[in-house]
Image (cartoon, rainbow, N blue to C red):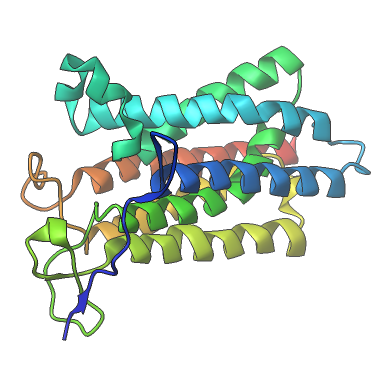
Length: 267
């Protein structure tokens, strides 16, 4: 018995003639909550003389992260999934309609971290570690927004919790957006929190960042097994989704960051 999609309109409310969408609310809350959590984490570790990232750095990095994630996410989606968007600048700028790539947003965040740390002359790995602990909050909210937008839904299935999406042919499907919210959001948040608070991995710059990258890649590969591939792309070699393909080099990058962190500690 499939569950009909809840009657949730993509537009949460109107401010005059301007619609405020759940998608935008999710991003706004994600940035604010990640920022506040990052400030809390930064203040907690300020007593360690090895930490050169100050709370003021975390505050000032907010605008950099917003630009990196949104610009990188949108350009990444167009480049990796829908190049035709480059032919229509208006559609390319219509981020409220959905269509953001995590891998693109990740690259945008990397450039933002590199530029900000270079200008401030602070440790890129230290601020990246703080960001990595907070990012699952944004991922969780983003996947909920995908669910409300009825996008990135899963494959057809007969499981009891299947959902009928109006945009998915009115057939029962895996609510893969919620699977991702659970794995990339809740599970990854707990893993990063345990690493930060229980094992004090912030004392080993790069370790938390490497763990985040590796676990995200693993969780993404798992969920993609249940997710319907993009119609205009399909499967790569009739076996893998594009998201899985992009997650492989991401996982290898995570291993590289962990190796770099370990080598730095043993010198």
